Image (tube, rainbow, N blue to C red; front, side, top):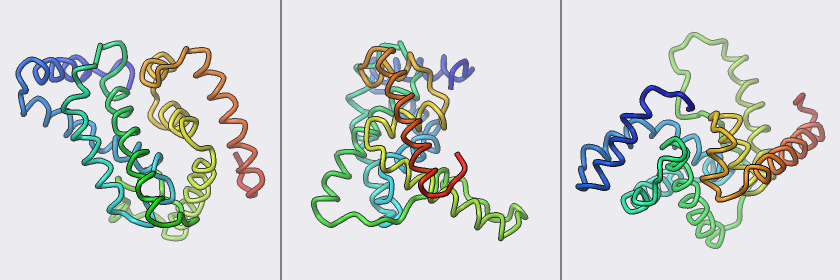
Length: 199
């Protein structure tokens, strides 16, 4: 997300929302980031999102509701996406805690990036199946990391957030973010190796 030409417009929309509760400015932020925030939610919710697809929608709606007030705390020290992802992440964790109290978790994994489906792309079905299986196994391994490590790895490696942005969003020193990322990646590789998946 770094260097994104839309970032200036995004910051302006945040300003418009905070200054005058401009609903169109808020809607523009949601439209722009919804696909990426759905991927963040899927990563944070892990296997629970596959078991109950409605859980992801509930968590996102809660995240968007929280953004209405949370945007007052945005200081433009990170990309708007990283700030918004932090709000969604916390909403997902709260939703997940409620869901796991209601029923036990299962081992089914959500597919990373499922929001951008592949219907009609002409891909080989066997290849798609192999990729889906691999994605299931990678996400199941990611799910075992727990949070915040799972979110840090996903936002850094899948969404391209910078270490500085993560430090700001997670309220950690940059050195802590780097060390947690290093440990989490090492653990993730170990989990994948145990599962016979080439890292």
